[in-house]
Length: 422
Image 1 (cartoon, rainbow, N blue to C red):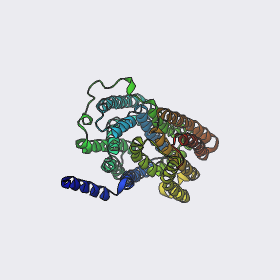
Image 2: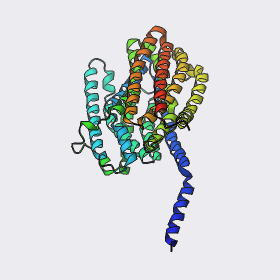
Image 3: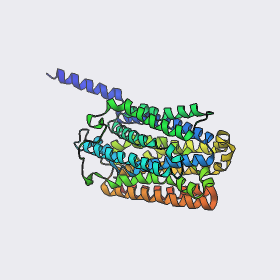
Image 4: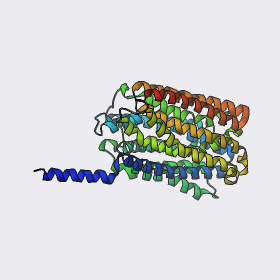
């Protein structure tokens, strides 16, 4: 009697066997996310090196500061909506609130693009370099839209969608700077135009894969009210980006020190590829899991941070080769690079703990948001003061101290949120 049902059960069992179980599926997803991040990081490093080689140190400090301000602007105007959309999508693929949140997100990124244009127009009368970075207004629109699409892909368990997105966004910039090398063109203008073009290409190539409500060019509907903003997620996002403003603030206070701190600060960013990839894939999984033990938390965060420790050790050993790569004028940045390798390991561990906290209760999420935001602001102060007192090495020590305190505070609270020790 149960012939048909038995056949279906056998087919389902075969699917499960081929998938390799939950851990195997999670490992493959992390692998896809990591591969995409690795490609993006390599292309980003190429861009950083090409800009550092083609620009004077003070000009590179300007470019690095612009990049930091852009990423901070993205975090500031997001109000935690991206993380909230991921959480909603992970728990209910057809959540009726998603279209409204996306429309609200579009209004915010439209505003950020408009603010960027106005600022570039006004500041351009004081320094013409600001007119050269006006194309980043288009980058803000398309980049932030594709970031939502990538977040939805991760919530749906499709991290393979990230690879083409990152390739289209990064590769045109690297190719354009290679083309510009040795030519009588302004590298800053080439960088900004190519970045906007890459963001547009990533948008166009991914458009057909999105939900109908995510394919609109212009905000539709009035969207949800003020209650849609989740400030706890926002605090965390802002804190992560605000801490990178130490480059801009130190460069403004002391251009020479800022230039020697800016390059190693940008070079260590890709070190946390494994932790970022792991956190992006694990977030929706944890969101659906009611209980995590202390042993699981520490083992997971430790495993996710171990590759960062290995990479940081290799980079620290090879730091002396930096002047050969970008020029002897950056010889003074070598000690700071070695110190910032320590900061990268601490930041990676803290980032994984923060992701766990964001999937727990409202109080845990708020605590994480406050800590990350507070540490981000503190690092701007400690790194800037340390840089003014002791050069780029002092700035790096300031970053280590603040990140160490933040990671410790998050870990202590995270252990309290766990459901036991076994």
